[in-house]
Image (cartoon, rainbow, N blue to C red; front, side, top):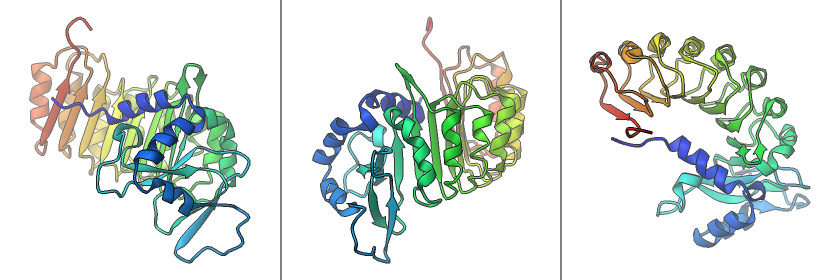
Length: 319
């Protein structure tokens, strides 16, 4: 059995690193000293805002606030070898702090990662242009509790060119999600919040370009999946912890859905028989189930005609 829970591992590791300011000096030193070329990148990309020379036509300029950092900036890793600490930065390479004037090549993908100690500065996102950043990751922390909440969401609404958004360990409900329904360029969205309920998921229905959705919402269940049926471009869906039952049949209306991951449910017997209606699936992952998969469920899963990969993982007895 494979262990795919990449997002969960990222959440744990991000939380562990986020005790230093803005994912700050100590972790940056590790990456800049051990990754070839990163120091050169910082000198190349970050320049004083007072610089009088005009940017080249092949460059784009982003003016972040000068008085404080909004977090760390990263670009896709282009080295020969795999990046260090892949579960923390993934395939991204630390660039510089999100402060002052930053210049990157036109077409370069730019990620802003905001840790718990920078969340209070997020209203300054309103000063950015709609296409200034391509990927935004905002992460809270459990001890002490520092989480992105409703108050930061209005400041995301102007980032209409954003392609990827992660809200991890957040306290966001539908009142917050309504501010991102206009981010119609989003291709990837991760929301982890204990405050989301079924009705709140309706705000996601306008995100028609969405291809990957990770949804961890304890107050929502499979009935809320009806609000995802407009996401006709959706290819990958990760849902946790209560999205099992008859509502799974709604996912059959997503013609491009090829990968489905179900995590962490204490669902009733035979709840998973409804998976057989999702005939577009090629990969199915079922993790942390607290009871054996029944014969009826396995029979139903076997009727998914295009299924190529099935991963099922349960805790050991007594856990």
